[in-house]
Length: 115
Length: 116
Image 1 (cartoon, each protein chain N blue to C red):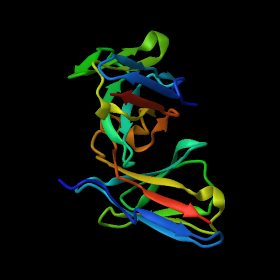
Image 2 (cartoon, each protein chain N blue to C red):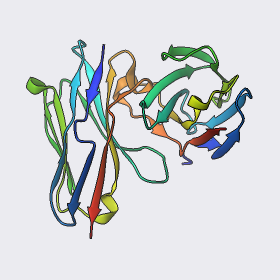
Image 3 (cartoon, helix red, strand yellow):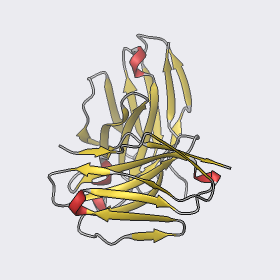
């Protein structure tokens, strides 16, 4: 069974630009969550999508957005990039069947550097 | 509000030593889930264990064991006879019952270095 796939693995962008990151969950998983990891703030929840609907949202500005497609693949977008957006962005997929009784499987992440 | 505290930022031991990683959590939920993840240098978070709040049985998996104590809100992780391959950053995480694995609150992580 293929794992969670995130593309691209590395990205360098300039301040003010926007960026789109992609995540393909494990086959059969309908929930996709996104996390931001930085040395200062650690791992922070961005949002979760299930069946193309945003179900949970973390405490991030509106510049961070996402969407999910009918095949459960998800994208997250960051507009008007700031230096502080430099981070490892991790995507996780999980089975919906038993919510908390399941684990989240993570991809290898996209390392975004804003210069 | 939910919170996870991993007080140990870095631990360094010599191979074959036993090592315990501490995790203390805070939640008002009576039903919740606790997790441990390992993050090797490659970046992905590797799932190690899930524990439900109503199941305080300790668990052992090979060299890994977990001690869950609701009375002290702790979920500690012990590696017995550590190996160099155990070197990684380890995260403890918590989720509320209705948020599930889809929304995790992570501790700051413990960087474990096993020296040969």
